[in-house]
Figure 1 (cartoon, rainbow, N blue to C red):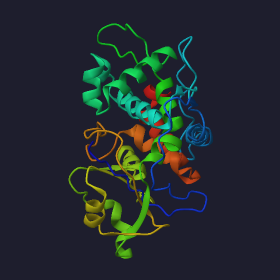
Figure 2: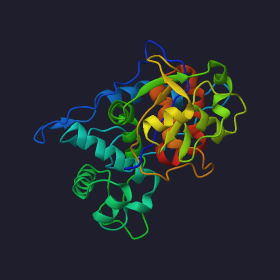
Figure 3: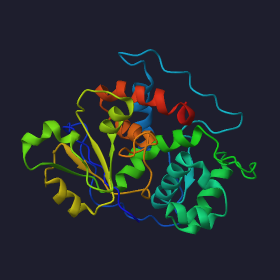
Length: 290
């Protein structure tokens, strides 16, 4: 799978240490695990900040009501292992952003999403069994029953998927470049995410305090091209890919989709980014998350 890298240009706090670089161990397939743990705690703690009234804006629009019988946001899904849960979250992210992928057989969906066919079939079956997926939906309509799937993805992105992305921190080799680092031209195959993407999509003129970069370049090549040096508490964070290339914002081809930029802001758990997350959600995400 192509690589996407995420770089967050923000001073790390003691309360927000970098995620471990080593991958999780694969659990035995007979283990049944309820996916409603660390990631859900991040959503519960950060979502009220992001949905609260912004200091310079009015109250957010009312949350979209759920259809009768649909699961609540972040409702538990029984998954066979943490690795299987990662498959679920990768697929769910792509289906939420591109509902047209849901049409057709599982083999075609697996080819588009770069996931194993068996994993796609299992994920779709579990989503249908627990009310996230409407089997036998009319042609031309997505069987994904929003907004609950988008809420679920946000609830578990930081605690499950993000932890598998080999997060490591760096700093610029030349500290003087830090002030204008977010204004630089990115290498080919890279996208802005996080605060930089949010400010670009919202048209905010202020310089961001943090930045996120999604890249298809291998980690060593990206570090060399951006002229970074490792630093455990550095201001730049790089993470590996979890989605195929081509997922970018509709209004800015140099930025990640608003949903992922929003998830980056929530994952930081920084109160100063709450207003920005609120504005991004109100402008771009009401149809997805309410």
